[in-house]
Length: 556
Image (tube, rainbow, N blue to C red; front, side, top):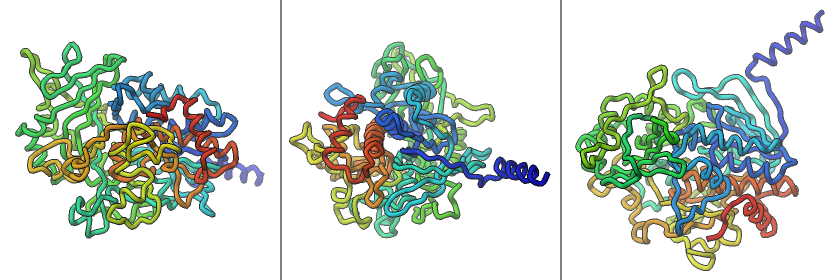
């Protein structure tokens, strides 16, 4: 009888006590459920079909795609080069299926279908990293705990624990959490900028800012013309799937007294609006996702659930917002009547017909709250550095595997340009504008008046060197590796590039390219028992060939 009671009690403890542990053994663990993580997991599973791959999704929803789906950023940031899309591979397949302006749930299903074809790939939803085991410069395992969003809107720990052992780990996260806990050398935000372009307080205080974040939100009531066209300052576009995209509003943003008055009034609260990108939530939908609200002083590393623990960042800017605080405050701010009044100024009239946001309404949920992205649109957090943390005067062009100069001055082929040394170990191409979305509200008026984009004013040296990149940049394999951690690959925000190079590489198509390469490299490592940090020419050529087989583009 006593033995029966003992077993019943043991079962009760196992089921109910939060600290009960579940162990698993994998070959490859991918941390991060965004496009980079999904691409990495997919390619790892495809390239090593007899090895076990686990994708950990550290978001409070059971869905794949991260910012590109549950985050509401459904306006794919592509830039054609010679009329061609250079970011191919996984992103190219998903893009062909979903279009440039897509249903977020549709892309969730597209990615899920792609990944589900590999029986060796499993997904662990809504678990985040609490700590890791490491020894001898190698990660041995991760300790994970379940998360959920509570009634207040903050992401909290809940019952459920996992310990996962593996050979190779991939950090595809937006906050660089795995890299940070592993002790990777990292810089924060624009820490590597030349000092003369930093505000005095950042030069002297030892802390620096990260780019402004955004909370995506849904509206309805947007009016479009019957056919795609440019009307005044607005461009109304339709993709191959029949879904609308809308971009513009610079003149309205800079001159309309309601809009400028809004920005003047609310900048002290850490909010501004910028010119708008908007995309229909799939062809035929009356709902659109909107990208316009800038949220300042958000530390992408800082989460409420980490407060009073060693996982909370030690050096933060005064008055910083956690990701949870920013999400809650931004969602509530959308209900401010001034916000909707301001949004409705973004409209245009042609032949007596009004188009744009003049009759826009927020989409509300059953509780009367705005429908928003499940995660913040974090634009910048940490950057993987090669060498010492201390920055020389030109640190952004010395201590990173992809430098500011390489991205801006990338050549047209392997023989020319600032990126030509990356050609031998290239694992893909990165291409977009060097797009900074402001660090401070006053950046919007850096020139003396409201002027967008702000990049040329914050970095006049960049403008003097020619401005936007003319060509894609070769992405070298070494940017995925971490000094001092031999079994970690990083295609996420903590990848090895300078802050200003990140302004180009941060968009989702480029991150998916990095994810593809990290997945293939991880597969090579487990198939041959190698350390990915020590790959040389034979291993990198193997990775390159496998990437080509999977549809990647490596050449200009």
